Image: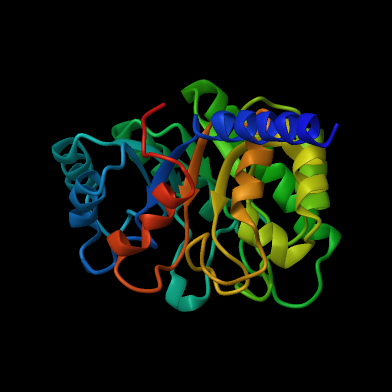
Length: 286
């Protein structure tokens, strides 16, 4: 009986690993390849490292045509960009939940869609913004109204909007710091073009309980990102999370989309990518 149990257990593990190998990783150019200061040049570095796709949080410091040319020259897919967030030096990190900033939100959304269409982007991360003081009903109303407006544009352009809870250790005073709030808004707006960005790093820092959270929220997930917690390095670096298990769990629960590598390499980016092979994966296209 013991031998039979071992064989069955091995088959279960192998099946899970086989499923997870179907996942595709994309490089976040805001975090990886920062050995190169120029974002434009990171497209080429990502391709040389074997990636088939990238996500670029903030391309707006460069002309749209310049970014498109870099992407096309590298022959790489652009999966995601963040919404234009305003002047970061002034503490602006999006306007969606900021009462009185509705016009700024609309302008930022229109600019982002211009970049998205030019780059062939499938997904836009709509950032909520930082608030001062406690969350009020005015913040909640502004957030819901702005997302409703944005979703109408996204449905027309066939682009998915993503909202992402961000932990207050990394970004103090960020409005959307609750998964319960994010899911409630997604359910209320009820559009196939508004989904959850499930960043496992933020999930751990906000609430933990990773397995049950994945199971409960999978139906709302439109994109996944990963990094070790609490230091946000490679998935195999010392920390709180077992990413072999987590990636297998994502596969078993039906996630087969891109997984963004949004982590801070401990050393050189390419050196740090060795975890992919050690976990039994290879970089692949979707």
